[in-house]
Image 1 (cartoon, rainbow, N blue to C red):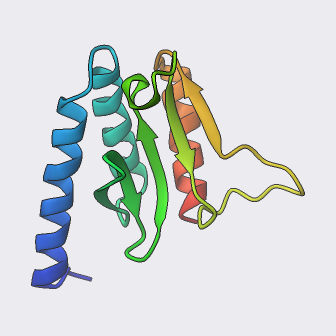
Image 2: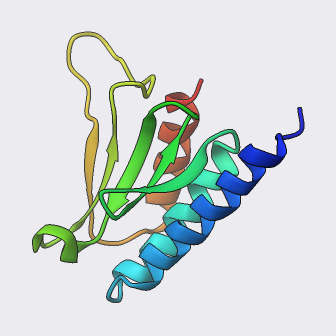
Length: 121
């Protein structure tokens, strides 16, 4: 189903804001941010990019499903990939919704792709 002109404009604006937020990240966060953005877009094309508290985030049109933040955001020693309550990651009574990222190898990329797909399933 094609996007309405307004939704397409919002998606373009959101994409630009996310790319700007990633570009402002220090290395190696910037490179990982580019990789995360590509993984999320490829595995959950229905999510719309936008920023959320200055962080790259992806929404289902109503609520933020997932986001990531640079080490710089809170002076942490790792990047963070997080999922909000609308992400369909429920698994029993306890499941992870936040992940520390020090490096993205093929293995981590595959795990993230699986999580993102499940989040929007």
